[in-house]
Amino acid sequence: MATPNPHIAKACALAPLIRRHADEAERQRHLPRPVAQAFAQNGLYRLAGTPDIHGADADPMTQIGVIEAASRADGSAGWNLMIGIETFGLIGPGFKDRCPELIADPLTIMASSTAAVGRAERDGDGWRVSGQWQFVSGIHNAQIFGATVQLYDGGDEPIEQGNRYAVVPEGEYEIMDTWHVGGLRGSGSHDVRLTDVFVPDARIIAPLGGNAATTPQLRLPLGNRLAYNKAAVAIGIARAGIDAFVHLATRKQPRFTTRRLRDRAFAQRAVASAEARLIGARAGLMELAASSWETVLAGDAVAERERALFHIVAADAARAAVEVVEALCEAAGTTANRLGEPLERIARDVRVVRQHATVAPHLIEDAGRVLLGLEPQAGPVRAR
Image (cartoon, rainbow, N blue to C red; front, side, top):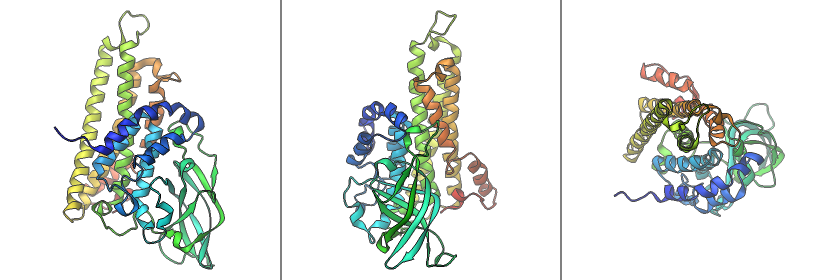
């Protein structure tokens, strides 16, 4: 019998805690601190971090399993964890030679955003940073914020091509109350504003995916790394949808009948089709993740066709999760629209994941261009 993955086991063990705080997250529109602290104490935020920043340097399949487990307990909590894992995995290595003291404590939580690019103006031995960044999931529990910036030295044009991260400690940035949404309300993806904040030069680090490939994980294509974790959230939420439907079907007696919902052929067909679709989508994602991992472990680069296939499968997994939940809501009847019923929140949450740029439906078509010998047009599919 296979040995249980210790990281996935930790995530599963936190499910009761996550569920206890799910309603609170929904009300206050950000992750309650006990859940964030539990993620940090169990080393889950740094799952993808390199060993030199207290990271586990876990393989993609482990990351998917951990995020899936947390998302099954609550979609917003899973989203927060996913963003934290990505942040330390993709940005964290840049701290090693620049400002390692900021993340020396393994319990330090970091949030970041690539949704906007701020301005960093040269000021002596540092930079004056201003801007407003959207979708900063988990910022209420973070001790550090990584702001995407371009560097300027008094002119209208940046002094170098590409972006950097300006690393700003808690207390020097302002959280803007902007996350007024239906789905994933508890993710706390509010805006962050900086106004003429001084950032020492040592706290300007490499941009997203801009660190040297010192481990196999850092050799994985950036676009694929950004995609598989989003798909994992969607899969976990859809799995929660199946759980909720099975529980509902065993207790609900539809109007004008003496039978339970589970006795209806329509309900039986819905849950069977949901299982088939979700299991297939998850298996495809895991298969391609494992294949890419074997490629980089061997020291080779993941080929363009394989990168494109990965985007197709990841985007389809997000689409599958939505289809699964919608079909179950249809079979559940009006109960699925009632506030307080698990399926109502699950339906809102899962749709948000599919809207993300890294697993959006149009990526399937764009990746299909690669399979037909054409150049991709969307950024995620082009990202290496």
